[in-house]
Length: 139
Figure (cartoon, rainbow, N blue to C red):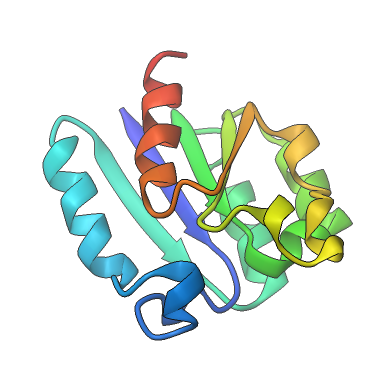
């Protein structure tokens, strides 16, 4: 089974950026933990700060992978194009947010992308990625 994790803008700074909100752990370290926990899976990772690159990755893997976990970062609240890309592909997508977007600024309370996903996990920290993988494993 192949799972693609896609992280959007500023998530390359996890562990450094606003640790009070996003924690002290970098994503590469957490990714290693996920790969150890799910050694039977092929877990690929892609991060970009560029909207079009995120869309291109969704198109690239959206017909051949078994699941996609996406944290589109700020694009969650602004990108009709990413929402459309998720709707256009066949692979199920689970949206993840490290922080609770509903406990933050009001503009973060709307997810344009979430309606096209299998589900949305928000506020569980990095563990949201594990929970997303679990939901994809259960179909």
